[in-house]
Length: 462
Image (tube, rainbow, N blue to C red; front, side, top):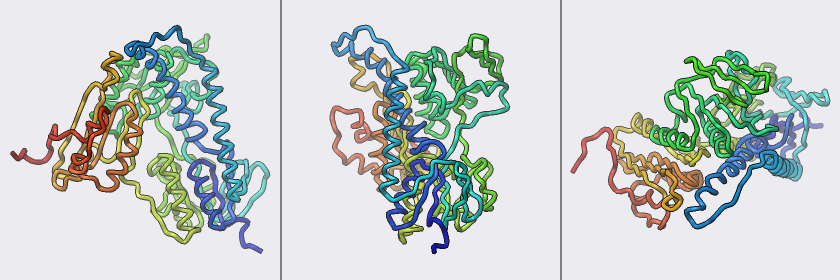
């Protein structure tokens, strides 16, 4: 008789947990997984995928306007929020089914219940009131939206979770936050026709991204009619008799809205998980502390993805889950390199980035060359739209290695994926210069910038 019921029990069936379970099962491990909501996790069910579908929907209003410059005469248009949400829900249900079937085909046992740790090798399954044992427990419960409970009336607000399921489209919406979720939803609601206000406590939105690109996104949002208030926070939310809301700001102003959304960050989803019963160490935000192999201070408990608060991106969680399974069950020790990770903000227009920002590059390297290009994309020479593309390359002047590339413009997210390969391989500015341009494209600017716009840390040498 086996010492444990399972070799591996995974708590949380998001992208990272599912990948870990399937790979471990492929190595012959007896694997079970528990999910209390829906399979696919934040990304598939209430994050990246449904959000991107709404981003697509929000772009049509500008596409209809731009068509005139190309000879198209678009008739009267209208938007149906309920139809969009219904179609989105159908696609999400289809994807969840795929996740379930893939797990079953891999030989993983599924438990549709909340699971909590009951000991170093014990997991309590709430729906069936049963405790099972496992040699290894993997926590992959992700994160959840954070609400500032010090704000009076915060219970009247919505988060990104509820924004994807609103029964009625808000004609006026105020969004608290300046990170990628807040910026993306501001673009979504504005593009679909809502009067949109973005309220952010900091000096500039998108903290952590390159300063030039943050300012450029801010500028483009305002061109599209989005009101951006920086250095401000909500202090009180009032619900009115007609179902609308008044949001009071710190400096005395008030915003009238049909919905007020908080997108002020996320927290690791560890509350009530029973981690204390296994003496698992947590950080100040409730994140599970792990080593480079995703192992906690308890040898039988591991954690991956957003619940560890390392790099909170779905592809990173998938990498961590795969590396965990390879290391623990595949006898193929692997760690995940969390540097030089490409990412994108699906703002209007998109922001794609990989590598260091200018600020980070100058703090790390003594001599940095900055190449920058700002131009009107070819499409808008006929559409007439006042929208700019911004491209920026940061180079270590001593070695010629490219330290970071940042792009604001159409399909910048697609570009960042390819750029990520080049930078991961250690591409130099000479490699970029030696690459033949694809014409006519916006991307050709990346290989045609010859002279730096700025040089930090050294005198200009003639």
